Length: 468
Image (cartoon, rainbow, N blue to C red; front, side):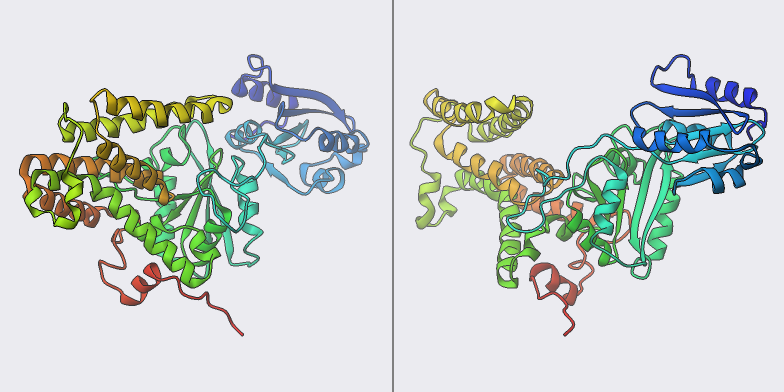
């Protein structure tokens, strides 16, 4: 619905739509510009006060001949770069609620939107989730424009495109698709655009997670992550240059990279900040450690059930000196839950007490757990390795997927011995094959379908392409 030319009608309409009388932080200021009535609408705390004061000086100095129509007024009396005209009532209200300064003038058939907004944000420090030994120390923040600027800083190419969309019938959350126009798969890009625009969601309460769940319906029983999340601008920029699409959501300090495979999820920035031989070692170590976290406790349980299969060299692994009051299987299950309990407790522990309580939990609890007969030393040893090794790869989602599948392997091994263990491995492989990404490609690419050249790139860190 277009706005009215009469200023009183426009002000009354906007005040009603925005419920300005009920919200203390929604400010409207009436004034006279060039002999005509005018009104400013803005959200307190989301505008740059100094810039707004300078702009108002030009408003008050405007002459009647400058205030004939919206277009000429913008050219002569609005000394700011980001200015737009609109007569759409819904768009004007959305602009105001987004922090944009909106000016309506008597006799103008369009409102003037001046983007002088500024959002409260923290410093762009290194993220806790994606740390590196060497390399950049900046990270994404909760402000969308700051995040796009961090990528722009790394890619100075006109092909880099930042396409903005609005998602959520209530929240109107800004979402940006970042891609290289001459590298991207345009079929995938159009598919993503349609999915985002048609997303049946009222608000993105959980930021990118809400958007991903609305875009891509997944099978609840398949725990493997469908997307790669990163809080590092260098990782996002590298993915864009490789032809991937990066999705940024306002209020979220992480980016979503599509398409992705399990090899991409396990990959880390440190692989490229070190020389090829070191990067290859780190990458292969991460693959092996991730595999060990999945099978180490089920393998030990299988060895305890069949000690005659264990080579003499490793007989010590099935020789338990402490008395076993609780079956080993239940010890491992209890430890799986206990580790998550300690992890959740550490998140809610005040920073000043984190170190002290971690020492207490690690030393006192483990010591008394063995002496009281609840657990034995080997159970604690293997579960300690599993809990620490989970952090060898950067994805929390993959870590929990491996946890759920490890428990599944334990249950099948307990019930069906060797055949249960083998069936569990086959089932896990089938879940990985069936885990289609949003692009529709295989989760195991380039292993399935096989592409030797691409698989070599995923396993071995080669030299970067340099033109001499």
